[in-house]
Image (cartoon, rainbow, N blue to C red; front, top):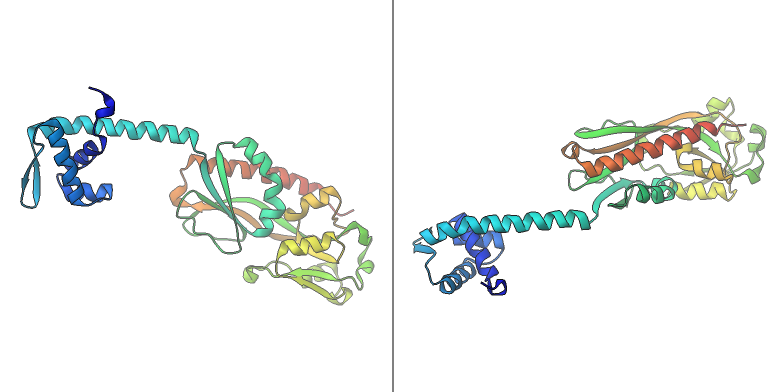
Amino acid sequence: MQRRRLPLSQLRAFEAAARHRSFKGAAEELAVTPAAISHQVRELESWLGVALFERRTRQVIPTDAATELSPVLRQGFDAFAEALESLLKRTTPASVTLSCTPAFASQWLLPRLTDFHSTNPDIALNIHASESVLDLTHGTRLAIRYGMGPYPDHEVVTLATDRIALVASPQLQLAGVDDLRGVRHIDFDWYCPNLGLPGWAQWCQALGSTPAVLGPRLAFSEESHAIQAAISGQGVALLGLTLVQDEIARGVLEVPFGPFLPGLHYHLIRSQTMSDNAILDKVVVWLQQAFSAATATIGEQQAP
């Protein structure tokens, strides 16, 4: 028999009808009408020259010919599906969505994506940069959160503990606290103000001075804009060292002097329903290694 003559659509309709023992059930599976299933089965019966169902009120009964044919077709369609799925796994990159804040995406993640892609060429990474919290229960999703937790119903990995320090452009030539007088202090609106992140009042208290030593406030709604303002010498900023370590390493920012304050934690979280996922595990391992290397760099960036 020539394969090009096989009535594949009719065979598929028959196999579903035989498995469900119902034209309606087959129609729901194949997203067509019961009438379409009935028509395709009749075409197959005509092509074979044999009846495949006894049609009764509200039900269809497979004939001996149908009972003989249906398991063979089921095995064949299952083999098709397995072969196609195997091929798709080899040719279609696995997709992972990583949720984080815009500042983290631009300051920390983007400069390291080349390393991620070279390490994980088979993973398509989707960056969801937003202050809003992404639902992690659907799809292969991870999130990096800055805070103290807890995160109920999620698997949590602590990537790093941040440190807060005064950061400025070297062009300001800050040698000590007296040089801060009249210098603008850069601020930004933290997306979750109730986390207890140290601010200027806490820094000045640790310094042993008062906020009056600082000049006027320069405020931004976005953290990455505050970082760029500090780089351009618009003032001094109180920032987490995790997000500006690359700028400090390049010499466009510096920590002229202390004090250093404890920051919050960077947590990597995923839904407990996705705790056993090999693709997500690869991303988790890469993030842990990247944060470990970054933390070592921060440890070297001490005030002179």
